[in-house]
Amino acid sequence: MVAIAHAAVAEAARLTDSQFANMQLYIGTQDTLLLLAYRNFDPAFINRFASFKPDGRTTCSRAVASGQRVILEDIEQDPPFAPHVPAARAAGFRALQSTPLKAPSGRTIGVITTHFATPHAFSNDELEVLDACGRRVSADLARACG
Image (cartoon, rainbow, N blue to C red; front, side, top):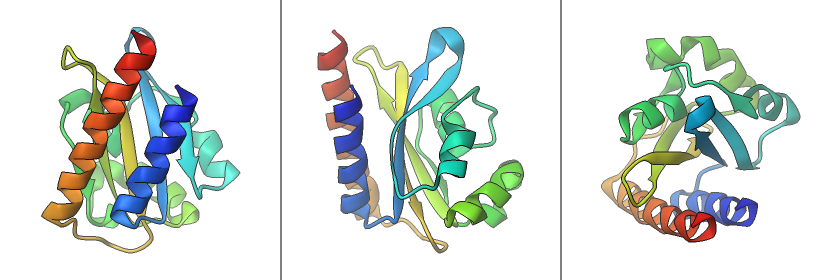
């Protein structure tokens, strides 16, 4: 599963030309997001978000709750994200998107997130390739787990 996550993070970052990326597994029985793989984050950021209960403020926790992609073109313009702005600034990103990963049943099982150093407007092309990436990763996870 970790190998799938590392490949997914590398692919998502390459497809969107993002500076940072990560993938989390959602463990529903514990209501916890668990970081499986990441790209270009410092240890302080990783330690803060290695495992946490979704709080509704991060894009990944909103994606888990809604089952839909969540986009912040500029983190400084999203009031719910405000508690995480200092950590995001320190990590070096200003924009991000989180795409949910889904089991064949439709249940959200994880999230793949790409982050950008500056405010970023996401193109339809970027979103389409992220959707395709998310479907591939979801299928790979389903095969690995089932």
